[in-house]
Amino acid sequence: METVSSWRSHHGTQGVYSHGSEATGTEMVFSVFVPDHEPGARLPVVWYLSGLTCTHANVMEKGEYRAACAELGLIFVAPDTSPRGEGVADDPAYDMGQGAGFYVDATEAPWASHFRMRSYVEDELPAVVAAHFPADMDRQAITGHSMGGHGALTIGLRNPERFRGVSAFAPIVAPSQVPWGEKALAGYLGRDRAKWRDYDAVALIEDGARVPEILVDQGEADAFLAEQLRPALLRGACEAAGIDLTLRMQPGYDHSYYFISTFMADHLRWHAERLRG
Amino acid sequence: METVSSWRSHHGTQGVYSHGSEATGTEMVFSVFVPDHEPGARLPVVWYLSGLTCTHANVMEKGEYRAACAELGLIFVAPDTSPRGEGVADDPAYDMGQGAGFYVDATEAPWASHFRMRSYVEDELPAVVAAHFPADMDRQAITGHSMGGHGALTIGLRNPERFRGVSAFAPIVAPSQVPWGEKALAGYLGRDRAKWRDYDAVALIEDGARVPEILVDQGEADAFLAEQLRPALLRGACEAAGIDLTLRMQPGYDHSYYFISTFMADHLRWHAERLRG
Image (cartoon, chains in turn cyan, green):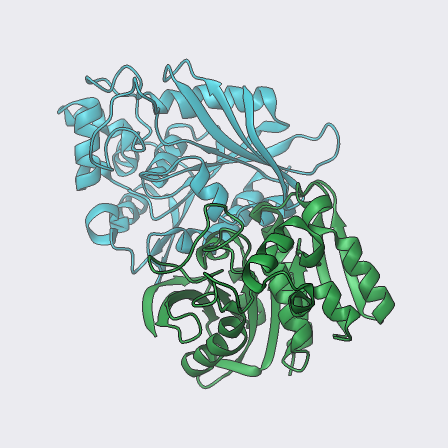
């Protein structure tokens, strides 16, 4: 792992790091904020998965998480959203290929060789974080935005023993049922919809995946709300499954980081309560 | 005045606006955050002047001011740093011309026709803000970063009756004595250094300008500290003049928005105390 950049910020260290990934077969870049802490201390970790077109940098610049992480003693990790580079397949559209990995392990050509973001985020990067940062890997939580909200919900639901908190900002809750997800899952996984269910929060819940509670904030003025996000599908699945979903509809807020940054500290406080001790 | 963009954020409205400026003879863009407030209420205004290469957008995206402004009930205005556009003179260097107006009214060719940022920020834009926003223009404060810290200090010192608070992040405190300032002031105002004194905080204080107090944060790892910023010159001038300067040297912090955003809420709280009632 190499340090690309490092800044002192909010009484901690905001770094950008790169490493050669076995999962994707590419160089991957991610960012980590570590608050100042007692020597030898291990801090809980909040994972933040980003949305379409984003890199590690969007939330690092616009997410306004550092003040709350410093106050609460949380490490904040933000991976990239896909493999990148000249040898990596891409699509001219913003919602497929580079910048749009959808946190799946692709099985279909031309994606299968590099687009293994599930393995990368679920297995490989946690090991890198555990090895290089003062992280208490027994205390992890996960959140994300839009496509990254989908990533947070699905990874959280598949790994309930690992994540004490699962939340999301404007997540794609049921990719199998919306255009963004249908395109991406068909492209990465093929036409057999049975294979999509592992990458669909609502389907995972229907199939028995359980976490005790989920926090979601959703802007009511989000242009993608009705067609792509459809939080009512998550509400229905959680009600049927007995999952305590707190779904907060936020009047006037859109899909941007002006929305995310507004509620970031709330989410971090919510996670911090669940990560104590 | 036209609204370019508007977002709901941090329980208020973050807008970007444009208007034809008489001072600069160009279309000018600025951003304003207005927290939610009681109908008919007038809120105090904090001006934020940006540094070299910046537009209204840098602090809007990275400055982390909205949470504190919403809590404290402050309007936050961020102008651009120069006139821009095809008919506007420019220089290939980043520290002269477009993006580098230095908050002066230029007198020298080719700058004099458009580079009138002093008149724009001191006179014209306040009238626009007063006309279009719920601003209490009897309660104003001013801050800024680097070149914009220079702007905040000089505009504050020239208008002590208008600004109840004057602060800065890593300001150029004595442009007449450092390379950035010598180049810009010679270019915009000509070689007669007597004419530069109105645009130099240390010289203004030496010439009798007074404010009761100034707050400055300065990163100790700032690459521009020793050559361009030189806060000791401001300390000396304030001591000689009896101005209560709080100069906080911040170990490890550099010149970036990772530094500014760390101390933004502190500055806003400091201003809010002075803007009460």
